Length: 585
Ligand SMILES: Cc1ncc(C[n+]2csc(CCOP(=O)(O)OP(=O)(O)O)c2C)c(N)n1
Ligand SMILES: CC(=O)[C@@H](O)[C@H](O)COP(=O)(O)O
Ligand SMILES: [Mg+2]
Image 1 (cartoon, rainbow, N blue to C red):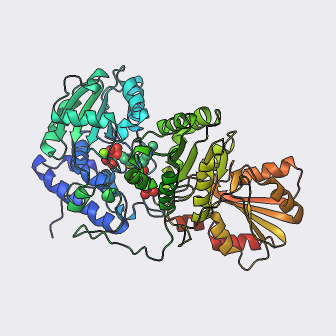
Image 2: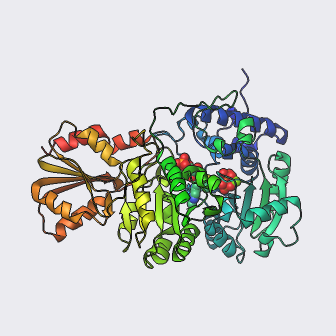
Image 3: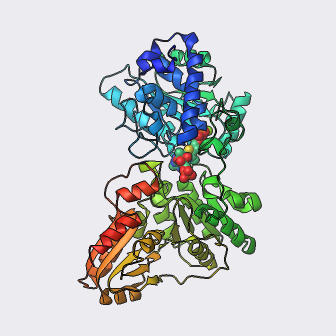
């Protein structure tokens, strides 16, 4: 049987030997290959389908890996991975010990920069361009490919602003498909829509920033994209190419329902139809408990507002955006702005629930300290995707929040062990705490099917004694309590769900330390500086000499894989915990 074009490509070198009129067939094959693998192995789909032609054109025209190609976020880089020597292992994408779902410098020389979080590509590419120049290499190209939602992130603008006053050999390609995970928002989106209509070319915002602006061009017209890139190669200095694409291109359902097919889960590769899994008799996702509870609370309390930076679907704030649109805000990929916006609202007496994935909150650290905590503004942070998130891997695990938040004065930190606790702390927080609170909860489903129970308020700084035993006490935080409950069912040990990392339930801790010789802390946050560290500090400052063991995320970045596999690997699954705890009895 004749080899397909895709089978003949083990590196972009091979691609560059193809004739231009062979490229559309290659695009077809590449698209089919991505669809086939993602249909069974899961992952991000729509974004990679949308840039198939652009990916081929970039590797065809530029001399990668010498020329540096940087994908913003990197969820659209599947075609890039497949064309750069990873076709044979692409079926391991995002799986334990398989390749990473995002470009990763350790994985390939073609992955010029590690990504996962949005809006970093322009700064990174500019840094490389400046470095090339300082090293005396004037022939290297530096290309950042950034989406329309990511270019609205503050950091992207900071990069453009700097690049515009340099003579760096930088090409920024805007992949404009008018959608992020959810529809793009904001004035820039409206501006780009007008540019596409041809009404706003003369006062081009990118030209105003000293970029040479080209486009917009059809990003699925391979011939047009290649000829434009060839032309731009010879133009020095900062250049901007505006490319119009369709997210999900080539799969009917993915083009039609771009939100669902951003990362659709398993689907039928032939028909494109999703495999619906029954959710009957399953506990709800934490995100849905958040989304439904905020609506319930906001209907009774007109001061409640909801904020999400570009994750209405992922956070389930979309429920409030549908039911109470005037009080629910998607601010785009703008975590820093989301936090300070919440601070401003709180300063005026509103009750903002600011929902940010734990990993993306890392972006807004100064805003949490300077704009919220220092002024004791009662913002309610809901940090979704805390702990290990699974297949997105190291860039996305929410395993640092307890460490980076715990040192901030005035901030209450709470982690629910189940959905009821999440509801009740949301209820408690909106009653008025006069200070900010961070509520962190995990990705995925909880444990309580009948989660919608009447609200009960939670006394700040109180733990829950779940099991009484002798000599050894396990102190857990958040949904790690579920692992511990499973692990100790046959052991004579105490189990306390501490609930609050700050303030700690000190009266209860005094009792625990006085009555147990061994204390084991368990968290799905970094061991360094997290919940266990708080207990160590408590013991040291009270001169307790009990033996304290801290379990949690070890001091290295955790790879991708199923959450259950990762927990097992680091000894946080119930079975490993049983063995560990038993060794002290
Ligand atoms: C700092 C940060 N916030 C949020 C996200 C989650 N996220 C991943 S992709 C994405 C949308 C990106 O849209 P766009 O740049 O237009 O690319 P497209 O998916 O359309 O190709 C978002 C919000 C992220 N990765 N990083
Ligand atoms: C690429 C990216 O950052 C998002 O698409 C992320 O993968 C979403 O994660 P969830 O699936 O947990 O919403
Ligand atoms: Mg987009």
